[in-house]
Image 1 (cartoon, rainbow, N blue to C red):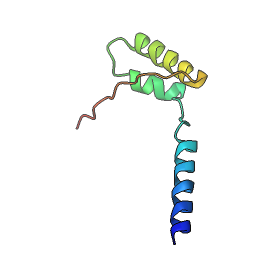
Image 2 (image 1 turned 135 degrees about the vertical axis):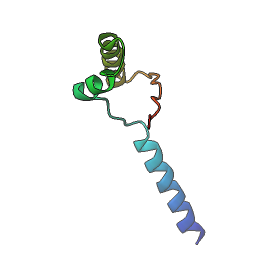
Image 3 (image 1 turned 180 degrees about the vertical axis):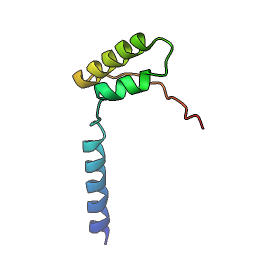
Image 4 (image 1 turned 90 degrees about the vertical axis):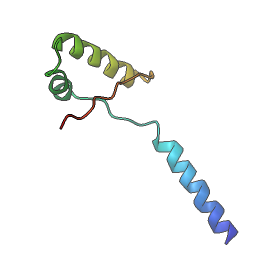
Length: 70
């Protein structure tokens, strides 16, 4: 019983740490759709493209959360 529990714990931690670092970047369409509502759309697009490039290179980035409006 203890062996099964330990095996389950190790496998869970292995998969957790293996797949946590993978993330997907935004496509050009998603960037333009997100920035369409902004006042300065061109600056928003440029900023998000730079962040996408940094993410693809493996650098950490900060992304603000856009609240959902009902």
